[in-house]
Amino acid sequence: MITIALREFKKLFRSIRSIIIIFLIFLVTLETAKLINKFPLVLQVLNLGDHAYSVGLMVLIVLASPLFVSILSHNVINEELKSRTIRFIATKTSRDNIILGKFLGTLLFWGICVFVALILIIPFAKEFYFRLFLHSIIYISYFLGLTILLSTTIPNPMLTTFINLILSIVMPILGLWSMGSDNIFLKLYSYITPYFFYSQDKEPYYYFVLLFTIIFLGLSLTIMRKRDL
Amino acid sequence: MYVIETYNLTKKYGNKNVVNNVSLKVKKGIIFGFLGKNGAGKSTFINMITGLTIPSSGSFTLLSNKNIKEQRKRFGVMPDYSEFYGDMTAFDHLKFFSKLLGIKLTREDIIQILKRVGLEDAINLKTKKFSFGMKKKLGIAQAILNKPDLLFLDEPTSGVDANSILSIHSLIKDISKQGTTIFLTSHNLDEVEKLCDEIAIIDKGIIKLQGPIEKIKSDYRDNLTIIIKHGKIPENVFSELEYQLKMYSSNITWGMNHVHLMVKDEYTISEINRLFLKMNINVFRIEVEEPTLEEIFLGT
Image 1 (cartoon, chains in turn yellow, purple):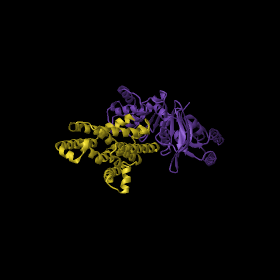
Image 2 (cartoon, one colour):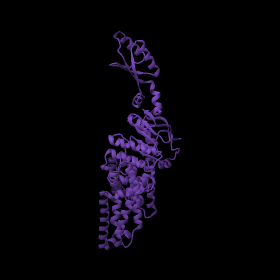
Image 3 (tube, chains in turn cyan, red):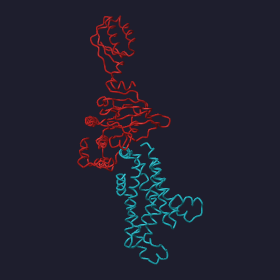
Image 4 (cartoon, chains in turn purple, red):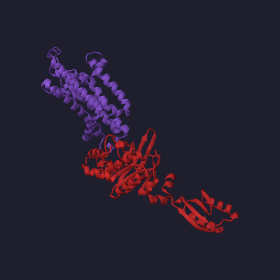
């Protein structure tokens, strides 16, 4: 599992798409923090609280991380199935290890990206936003779990690219909309996505999202165990 | 002692049984050939026992062990229709696979394995630049990383040039000499005949024949081809001779002073010999052709 996680992690850092995304994350985070630092009054008016300097990173994660995850990982399993590279791995380690390794490697990649972005904010905020780091990772893990589930379920990488792209754009929009709406369908939608939980004041709600990640991974493992490679 | 035991192993795709109730036992230390035409069920069978395909029913044990985790450490697989990561070198692959298997190999160990399969010049070459033959060799290299007790080779030489075939054959023999049991699938009958001690022939998912090659051949001697080199046949007896011969063989080909006949058994040969003598035709020589594996294979 660790071997697969490390390979996935290294592979992500080598891809040009990841480098662009990392650059974008760092740029937005740093520039927003610089901007907010110049206008301390805006901080008070907007009442952004303790995490003011991380507002750029937060917006980027909530709105764009589903898209970023989708771009980088939409074919994390089905590409290996299609190219049949998985056949060499599957005779050497369990299918569970393959799925969990891919998940952990990708999550580690995002962990490092968010961690470094939060380090860039330290000169302005004078602190490391550990909780924000944790909440971001949980949020990303939801979409990563979903992406892995889709990639395990749907054998065609082109189809998962399309579905993931649609979902990664529609889901945050519906999610944010559901936070301020009384529509019953949107409310139901918010309960099965991170948006309801992330709109609550109490922190334990955030960790509830992990349950969905576990469900997505559990389903992926079950499907993978029954699949012919 | 058996290293592979399968019991009524079956794989269904829809209503079709691709592998149908296959019960097979493979002895330790031999090279076992699994023969069949394309689509006969060879690869599906090997995929099931190596964990790549989930059986529809039946069971199996490898190396007297049902625990797949334990088995993995002791067997090696070169699956057919597999691909390497194009962005990784031969060395990177073997390093990566050895870590997956949980075995510690030094750089020198990996280079030795690559040398053994004849890839010493391609250690640092990315596999996207590999020829088909080189990929087959790397496929064998990754399968012998853990010095397996049991090695599965699915079509190890298909699509490979003649030189590479020879070196792969020599490598297979070399691995076998070190005590590894080899389960080899192929549709190359010549290869199987050269390499294997025992074979099984599968057709439409069913095992048609199984056993040591020599025994299978001797069992098939009731379909012997004989060539009788004879003296001049008088014209007035030719049609009578032909009529009589047709009672022993439906497959007769006449040549210049010789005749090819397909007969059922060795007793028929002596009866035919008597027939020639009775008609005062000299018989100079009777050659008996052993059935080739190909004839047996095509006859199944």
